[in-house]
Amino acid sequence: MSYEFEGEREYETEPAPDLGPLKNSRRTTIVFSIVAALIGGGAAFVWHTYDGVIEALPTFKSGAAPSVVSVKAFEEYQRAVAGNLRSNSEMLQAQDVEIKRLSDQVLQLVVKMDLLESNTRDAQAAIPSSPKAAPKKSAAKPAPRISTGGAPLPPEQGRSDAPASTTPPR
Image (cartoon, rainbow, N blue to C red; front, side, top):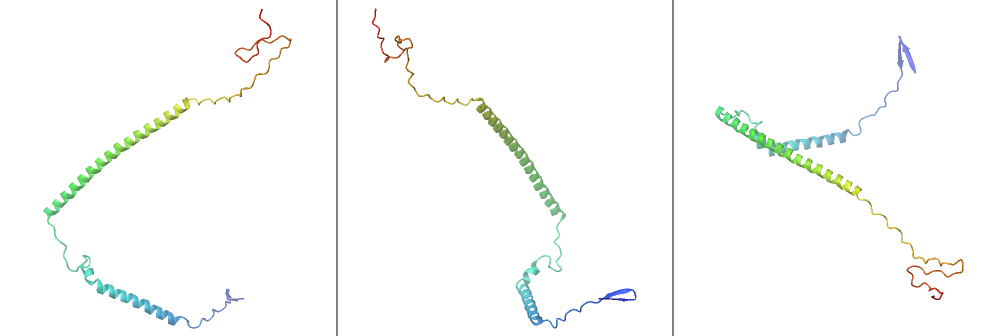
């Protein structure tokens, strides 16, 4: 339901329900008190246990003047650092040269292996595959020879069991 009052429209809303007093206010107070006591006890323990250690840290020293180094000692330190940097740079350059040499050797080995593999494949392709053995035919007995004119057949070549001719010699 809405009402219009001097050009403005007002809507009627439901009032929020009354929640009454918070039911867990006593529990909340107890939990908060316990947490505060634990934090305070922990802080007191750390303060008591590490009291001397915290003051020994250079950031917590009060009134201590920074140590003064002479110019000569500083220049010697600079020369030592420069020498270390130079030797490290030389060692890195030598290491780069060695890595380059080893990578070239590995590349040469890879090329040789590829060449050997291709040669092996070519050689295997060039070798003709062995021909398949022809299936053995069973030794069948030759068909009997038949005389069509009634005359006896001449003996077969190479056969010893062939019947001798029946005609008498002349």
